Image 1 (tube, helix red, strand yellow):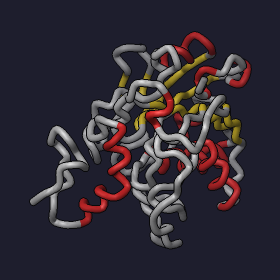
Image 2 (tube, rainbow, N blue to C red; image 1 turned 120 degrees about the vertical axis):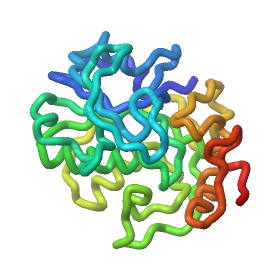
Image 3 (spheres, rainbow, N blue to C red; image 1 turned 90 degrees about the vertical axis):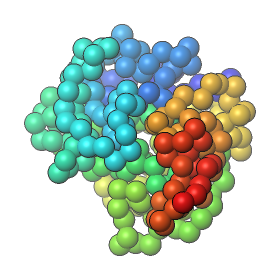
Image 4 (tube, rainbow, N blue to C red; image 1 turned 135 degrees about the vertical axis):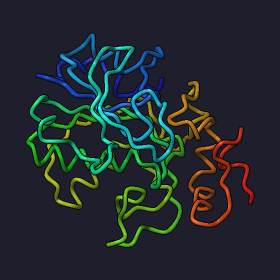
Length: 250
């Protein structure tokens, strides 16, 4: 049976001190509870850190937003997608001891959650904070496809020298980037159990949870590495329609 990092029985012991969680709606446990609720029971969860789309997935693509309070948990939310910066603020870093990352990625370089993850590696190293990654399987499996990003062309939609479809879990990607770029972040990866990397999302036996508003189905994630390139033209890739990245036109 596939079990993600959030479901590890040893998780509480790996989350010392004041904890900050980076998550999104797709951060859910095997019994379909929000990672926010799970960590509130397991550790001293002090605050939430929000990537693009927000911790509840209610922000549009590219929409910048400021700090707030999460209505459901009552926890303060610090934005990692705010005007002027996508990094951890020094004052925020002083409020925590352990950073935790739990987001279901879609296995594509353009999807900005992995750019936030790389920033967390940099911030963890800069502020001396341990980064715990609650690993999740890659819905596109182990296949790697596409042209590797050229060094010097990095951006928030292309943060590392990897192909569009990169074939790794977020924990594996973080370990590679941390080593190849000599970042020096203290990493603790709570690995998946029962994961067959040769399989893709349909083999998991789990419901698809939308990681963002324009990613309604697993098939959307499968199309995304190719059809998201349409955004670089004067055509529409279908955002706002019932089937984004599957309906294309002008």
